Structures are given as C-alpha cells and as structure tokens.
Length: 430
Ligand SMILES: [Zn+2]
Ligand SMILES: [Zn+2]
Image 1: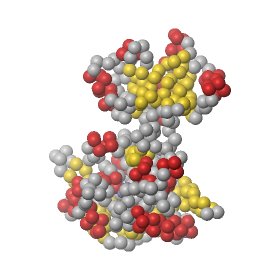
Image 2 (image 1 turned 120 degrees about the horizontal axis):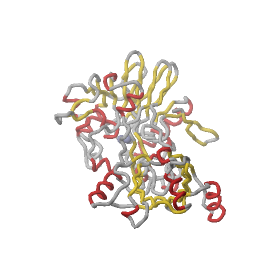
Image 3 (image 1 turned 180 degrees about the horizontal axis):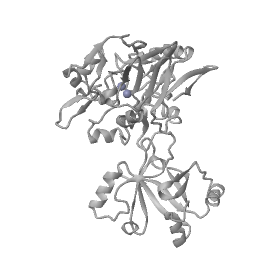
Image 4 (image 1 turned 180 degrees about the vertical axis):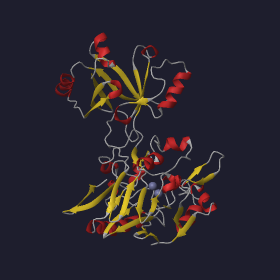
C-alpha cells in the first residue's frame, strides 16, 4: 500500500474565526467549502503545499464533530491519507487484524471514497483513508467539476443525447503531446500520478424513427490491472446513462464507430455468462470504416494495446457489422468525414438538420482544451495530419457555428467554438 498525506482534519467551534486566523496569521486561504451530509459537517479546505488543512464544523448536535468538541474541545481531529484503491487497502488492513471503523468505503467530500481506521489501531490517532475522485490529486481540491449528463438537445429535426460510460484518467503528457505541462496544467490539473480526468461520451442521434449510437465507451470487459492503470471509475456507466435518458440497449438501431480503439468500441460487445462474446446491442446493425477495420485487425507494436479483437471481431462473426468508406451516409443528414491523424482512417461524424450542423469530433478534439491547432495528442499516429485537418476544420467550425461534441471531456459534453480578436474560446452548450 502506498499512501500520501491528503489533509489534516481540525475540529473548530467557529469556522469563521478559524479560517480568519489561518488566513491572517499563516496566509492560507479557503479554496472551497463543502457540506458533507453523511457526516453532518461543513468542511473548509485550505491547501498548504502538497496537502490541505480541513477545518470541520458541526452542522447538527448529533454530528461526530459536535461530540468531539464536547468531549475534547477544538483541535486536531484526524489525519487523512490518500490511497489509489481504498477497497484493496481495507482488505489488506483487515487481513492484518487492524481495527476498522468503516468496514466498507463510503462517499466523502469531493466525490472521494473514504473509510476511518479506529484510533486504537494507530497509536491514538484517528486515520482516514481516502481514494480521491478520478483526476484529483492527493492534497488538492477537485478543480475539474465532473459532468456526467445525460445531456439532451435538438438540432433541427434531430434529437441528440450525450451519454457517459464512466470516468478514467490518462497521462496528461501523453494527452497533450509536445505541449509543455506548464501550458495545459492550468486547464486540466493532473493528479499526483500525472493523470488528467477523462470520460467517455457516446452520442445518441434520433430522427426519422431511427436511433443511432455513435461509439459506446470502453464497456465491461477490461481486466482489473488495465482498469487500475487507466484509473477507470465505472460506478456510473453507459447502462445507467441510457436508463437515465429513458433508453435501453434494445432501443438502438445502429451503432457507428468513429474508430476501433478500446475506449470507443469496448462497449460494442459483451461477455455472456457462458464466456462467449456477443454484440451488446441485440437489435443493432453496426457500422465501421473499412480501412479502420483493416488496421484494427492488422495491428503493429505501436497500436496493438488500443485494438482489442474482442471488441469488434465478434460483430463480424455475428454478421452484424457493415464496413463503409469515407463520406459514407449513415442516416439522412448523418455522415462520416475522414479526419485521419489519430489513426489513418479516424472519422468524425457530421450531423446536419435544417441548416444546423453538429460534429461528433471523437479523438480529433478529445476535450475542449485541445482546441488550439497544434495541441495534438501524443497518441496520434499521424500528428501532422491531425494538425492539417484541425486548421481547416476550426475555421469552418467558427464560421458556421458548429455544435462540437467532446467525447473525452470530463467537464463539458458539447460547445461552440468562438473567435474574438484572434482569440479562441469554447462556449459551453451541454
Ligand atoms: Zn482513439
Ligand atoms: Zn479515445
């Protein structure tokens, strides 16, 4: 088990006086305040170097903090240590005979999972274990507000629903290629393992009696080791998101692949109880690009980890996969457009209705932070092709006010690219 100091909890009778003292005497400021209902406390966070002070105020007489103040008066309450996998940490401690207060992790502040160890087990110190929310560094407040949706809008006659297949985290350096960290870290602060928060947002397009799903996230076939590497958090995923949108796997008529990487195509298939792999959407016809299929089924050392046969070969075997070419029309108003760059045949999806255009940008603009033309992922196989495509595409998107969908953006599902006095920004829509 590897632990890092996350914060030190201090019980205060009067939070205003407490925070004023730390501000005036020690120069520490409160970055945010959070009410934790389950604990009946209000927590005030003051970052101090790589960790935080957490001033705790009771919100009810039955709060553990109220009882602590009654018994011992204001002062040091607990030490919180961050771990990567809190469930594994509790199992390890239980096996070693350590006395626990919480047998299972429970929700804490900022989307974290927490569990307390009994003070008798740690020399009289109340120890909190904390697994920060994905993309949040130990000792740092959550700076990227995670958005899961589903988020719905209309485009002419079409209905668009952005879904979510859970959150994960990827190395920030790899996500921004040659762009120095000092430039991107303000927009997407990395965690203590240098990873930034990401999500997977498949998009539903409904119109003319047909329901189309573009990409399907990573699905549930990933082994525990890979899931840990990618910081996969699937407490909420596509099945929940479809249900919240009033849909189920049976409602999908067509599944379209932007490309066949596992974080886009993993959700295309599922493993049945008997171990067989089968299409996850039982009624759907699946569509992928012919060249992308060829590359995915002939991987090389550089892309092998991304192309997992279990995600797409069973579709071909089941006879439900159709291969098409660049510019293929999927539905009236919905077509492929080759961007290349990320993979040779990577496609964005153009959606048009009544003079308005939306674009599912897939891994061309993985997040809205990737808007500057040269901010190209290190993962891209042909980065100069990405740059060339982005340059022309951005002009078009600004002039024609495209609604852009950001498939991996943890905080924003869609927005419109604006340019004022040569400076670009994204106006959030969903
Ligand atoms: Zn990809
Ligand atoms: Zn991707």
